[in-house]
Image 1: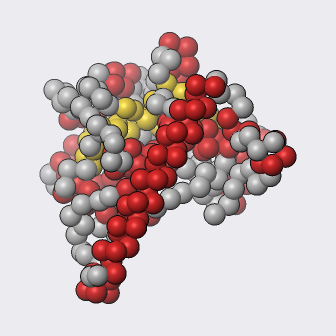
Image 2: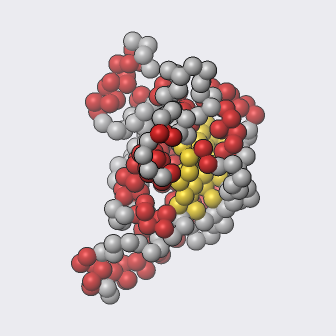
Length: 289
């Protein structure tokens, strides 16, 4: 796996990613990461023994996963400095706002951090809750099917993400079946109380202020939140009197909510493909992004 800082010896053995942290913050980050790595290795060893003694599972693999462990979660390496900043801030018990350019891995990173948290053996959190607004689609009420069929298009990206992070193609559905994962539209949140969870509010640029307020005020005891959004990708601009609130949200998070860390991604952080990165940088040059 690639490393962001391959020549740490040049800094006297001190990871430059920790330079701006206080002594207490450094100690906490290092301790948390060491603990997680030890848990992962221990669980991996157990998993390897299970596979070695189960010939049928080794040949076919289960169709529906009945439970998940931390050892099932694929280990990832941050591909950019801002991805690394996000991981360090999350390890430091911060809530996160991942804002900025398309293709920078915001949703993928959010799902990874959330799964790592809830699958840890020493956490009070027991599920991941993903929330999206459906306000940008004014025809959703007239599409055929029940509510699950109506919101299915909004779930599609996470099916792919979960299949990449966990061992099976059915990992997303399996996680929902066993209560590890919930998906909600902002249209059906009133009255819910979300305790002991990691909440991912994705594509927040497609939300209006009343939706953001509704989502945040659902959070109960022992819950954490990751907000993801990019003002340049809003689908609300074409609708009269419907403007997204991402600018106000950024101001609140940066100036009035010390439990949050805002990580701003730019076109230089794009990891989706070389072509997308080239496109975004070109858009920036002509003022279109």
